Length: 109
Length: 120
Image (cartoon, rainbow over all chains, first blue to last red; front, side, top):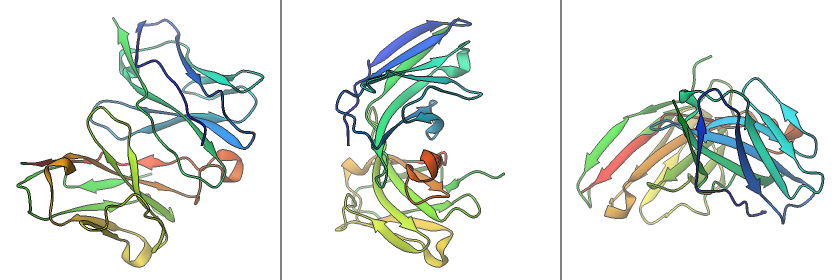
């Protein structure tokens, strides 16, 4: 499975867009990029996933570069409740998710 | 739709004691997972069930950990005897698909709130 690299922590002002980067330079063609987040004292929560194309849902947008070596999760209008650890996972079909240490996003008032 | 239920939420035991955790997945989800999450780390998969059969238990310390999913619904995870290094949050998750990448990657996992274990 491709290794992913994320910054250990980031801050974002409330109401602004939060852009969380993820590097997956060794990703293979059949690996999806998944994003989960984990709010303190809760289990991880699925956010979004993608293979090649950019994706958007009610929670976030996922931008994957054309070469698929990196991606960015965008929370368009961050709120205090978005403070959490965000995990970027590259997972091939037929394999299970492997969580790294993620990025601690702190949304500041 | 009810989420994944786990109990107890907290447990404190002394080393060498036994402990058991219970999980009730989302109704209809055939796949059930147990994860261990040590403080400051991401969750680590311990075991995966498909209905009542084990799909992957390669990272389960089988000398002290055991898990079962009788009747393919609820599951229990047991530690016997516990060690200090077992202090962690134990998360249960379920999914409608065997692997996340099936069905266009839509097989996302739904996690329970976890059981926080402290071994003294």
